[in-house]
Length: 573
Image 1 (cartoon, rainbow, N blue to C red):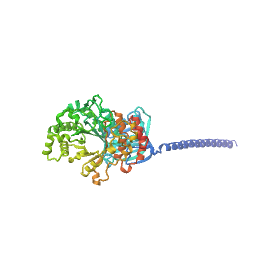
Image 2: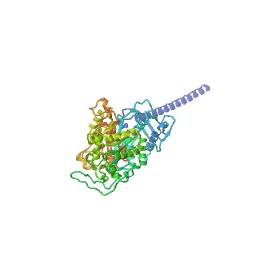
Image 3: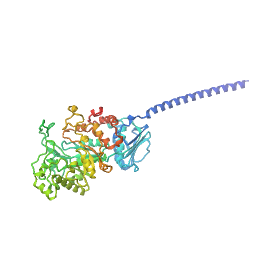
Image 4: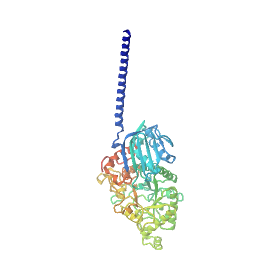
């Protein structure tokens, strides 16, 4: 009996212990399940991205939003091959603010948790790229290093604008998961800058190049010589900058109209870039896959050069570097000495600029001096030319032949069509689209830059609101929406002729832009609109979508300290 009782008590004790363990296990399972559910619920909220996470300009060709985010922190590394070191260094510097320090760069390692930059020869387009972001890593692929660089620019816009400020280091940032396959519509995507009327230091030129790169544009047209100033050092002809680089005053205000005759200040104004500085700018641009095309104006817009070397003019002077804006009668004489001088200048220019193209101007050439010049008339007769227009064509063809012999090609404003187009010339169509159409029909390459849509020195608002804007020389206005509406390929061209339209460019003439902040104000956000015009597929363009995405990009402009036309962003034009 005692043994039976003992056994019973043991069984009761064992049962109690098992029950306790079962209850404990149930509690553990419950707690674990609860934590898991909470975690899953929380994670689900974090990984579902919305449309606002994908505000990229210019609009990519194809973009598929995904769920999940990649966490970028100080442990993230950039993996690449040696031929992408430049792109890796650019990316590392760019996101220094996000990681607290520049990300490490490695030639090997696990892709998990890192950013891989790679060349993928299967990508169809030379400037095309693919961007893949998952919670496990980021892969930026390009057919070439150019494509990888543009993929990095899209990656940049998927990060918060605060990354642009290195002083705002955070523990981590995250990027939304996405799959992007992208390529540009046009091969030539350019921005022009006139430094002849007003001169800007190298630091400002680099800021301009940074803007060009951010917008996936690839050409900087540097207008280096003008009536009002010669801005490039030519060692064989030092007076070009010593004399031609400076003017003894500048027109004040809105000058030259019937109600505002010219008045001048008495301040000596000028400046120029040394050849060392030119090389610095070209190298800076190259690192951002931007081609710098120099413009050396001829045969007109040459007063600064003639002030320095009057023997190359039709009247031999005296000449003075222009203090006012506009067009001048003074042009180069079509003499052998002049051609020798210009060939010497262009030889040094070619040594500084590796670009395939040299822009030679050719616009607004007044013919009065040639009509009155016995020598010019002798050339017309000797060469069997019809008139002064054909003399201009002869002049341009002489320069083209020299540049072609040295492996370069010319670009000229659409006036070079007058009197016959040089054989291999590319035409930059600015007086509307007619010049571009004519050149394309003659099977010449064309860059479209009509004043109606691509001149960023015009007002951005209509006449009623212009009193509140910085002064400019014309009451014409070009809004951001108007720029965005531009279609570079004229509908009147055949499919074959359309192939000669290589792209478009925004022009910035600086008569009324004495300071860099005004340049930025005139350019932004109109160049942003143009960047989508020249990059994105025609069927992907949508003004409302662009204007919405512009709200996001403007935050990046704020962090970077750019002075932009905020009224063009905060309301529809």
